[in-house]
Length: 157
Image 1 (cartoon, rainbow, N blue to C red):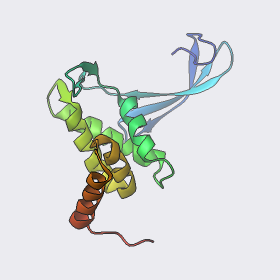
Image 2: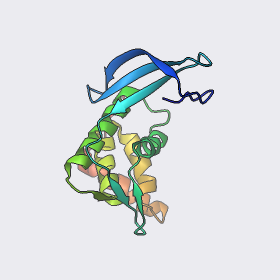
Image 3: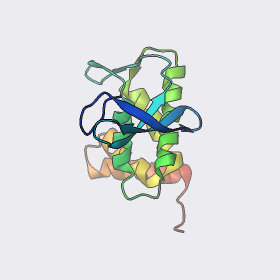
């Protein structure tokens, strides 16, 4: 594994343990050249997934891109990194289990919204505000009103 600090290809594993409900291995590594320490994750990849974008372009599925897009919606929300990783792992497993090599961004977005609605309702609305591409504030207000009607409004804690 190449060191992110000095670029050396020589590193040693200092610690290794299961992560993400035993679906990944977390490795703590040390660089033999500069002494830098860094963490890597090893995951099983059942198949190479291709994402079909709205405009028809195709790109390899990027788990980290999915995580980054969700992280924006979760900023300053009481959701742990572990909860986020668990949600992302669940979505990736569902995508791989679909049996399709190509997956539409709309399918990924719907799975993500479903998972976010269970994890954090505010993050769900934040994500939907971008994903649904509302044209007017009234469109957004109608969406929020429909969510409140469908799921009830939680009382503040």
